[in-house]
Image (cartoon, rainbow, N blue to C red; front, side, top):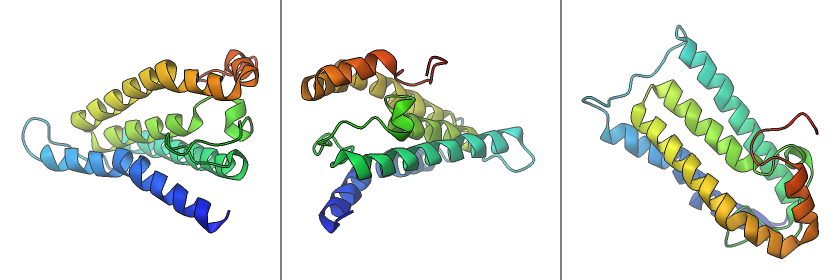
Length: 167
């Protein structure tokens, strides 16, 4: 990857996933550190700890795999202001249409479970619903305009979030 593309990706990461999975959750944990909504981190003796570790690791792995495929083949970033120039249907994109966001959603759920935090669970729900609306109402229409019939065929054959048995 050339230096220019690396810088674009670093800016996209700093602007999108960093606030979503680090800054906002940290802020929520700080604001709700005491009182009725205080968190209580799970430990290795709790099932929630191990479930959250597995889900979080799966989310990080899925996001990393998605980004690596996107960088190598898409010639752009995942940021709305710098979309890829090429339509990518490789790696995780063969199984679900939105693997990067799915990975982030898994990480947010894992954070809420690990920290046993209702405010983090609320953030996970808000982020998930907002992306469901954005993707279905805005992003998919833009992809159909940019990539035409190949995207429409892809959309018909590859599920948005959960892999199907027909693949």
